[in-house]
Amino acid sequence: MNNTKNIVVLASGGGTNLQALIDAQKRGELGNGKITCVIASKADAYALTRAKENGIKTRTLIRKDYSDVVKYSEDMRDALIEEKADVIVYAGFMTILDKCVCDAFENKMVNVHPALIPSFCGKGYYGLHVHEEALKKGVKVSGATVHFVTAECDGGPIILQKAVEVLDDDTPETLQKRIMEQAEWKILPKAVALLCDEKIEIRNGKTFLKQEV
Image 1: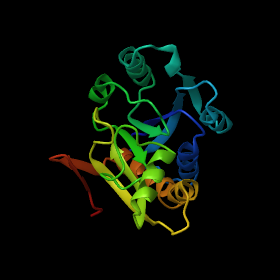
Image 2 (image 1 turned 30 degrees about the horizontal axis):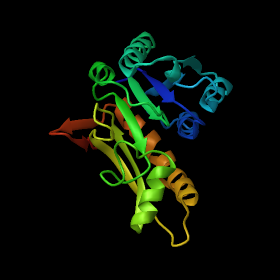
Image 3 (image 1 turned 30 degrees about the vertical axis):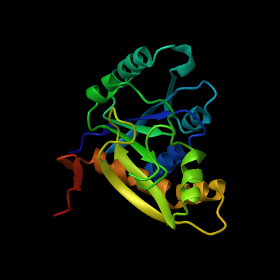
Image 4 (image 1 turned 45 degrees about the vertical axis):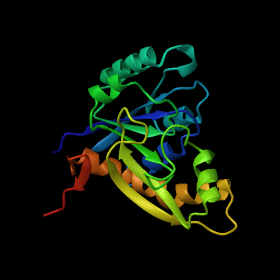
């Protein structure tokens, strides 16, 4: 159990969820995991700067250089194998990878989604779109979900969820910020630590957290 697990983080933008993971690592809260590499799909992703400032190796695999998601996915799979990734975290990574990656890293890839799945999830539900739809529906609570990544968008087994109250005067921006601060940045590091410490069991498409004895 003392083998350190290599965590590779995939990012496309500002990397606020990456920062939450880096901060958790500094507090010793990633269990057996250590962030060893950040791979960005855009050359100007601020996540790369955050990684460099914290002495973490960076790579870029530019999505727009590829006309084909299958070839992009194959190169991403090869990069992850090269980096000896044990756990892969989507941190604001905006590309849905082909199943070749999911097959190679089954039950090793996690994503955080800014809603309580199965609400407001799937293709087209990303960024502010999620919160716009939640407010349109008039939901009283929203939140965040950490789930395993499978070939189905937002369809993998759920690991952790946290609810956040929706306020009457919320805008998509204020709701997004509150969900990040109160839910995403808390449950993502926790789920990553559980995975690195091999405390998640999957049975019949559902996760069960192994309790401390």
